[in-house]
Length: 152
Image 1: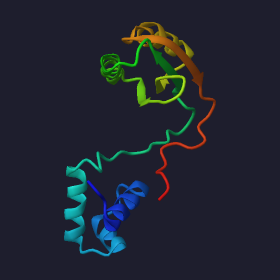
Image 2 (image 1 turned 120 degrees about the vertical axis):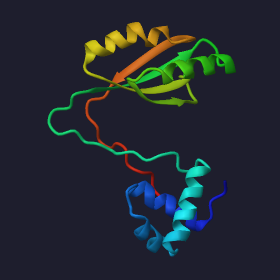
Image 3 (image 1 turned 90 degrees about the horizontal axis):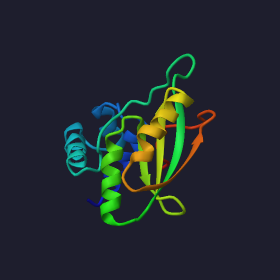
Image 4 (image 1 turned 180 degrees about the horizontal axis):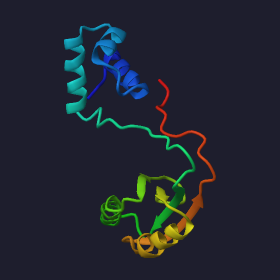
């Protein structure tokens, strides 16, 4: 789907505030509320807007550890990639997975309780994922920026 200027503006505004009321959204892009809602529903139906989420900052001490893990597969065939991706989707600790260029094939963002929990995940899950040849992990010290929308 090709976005015109109004659709692109709607998407930018919703990336900054996914809970923006339709009336406010319509006013901001210069449409009637009904016309804006029609465009919004079309963006959702066509998969441009895939969903809505809350970005949550938990009060108090952080109760999870973020680990960024690079995975290199034995081969980069379609079958190896598909089997790996299917298995990754079943692991709730893996919050994000990106197919990459460069030295590693995938970059995973993993959230676990602590280092011992990561060791368990590494031994019981990551090392047993289909086609894995190499695993390299880095532990995040603190979050500087997270979950903010991309610029216009």
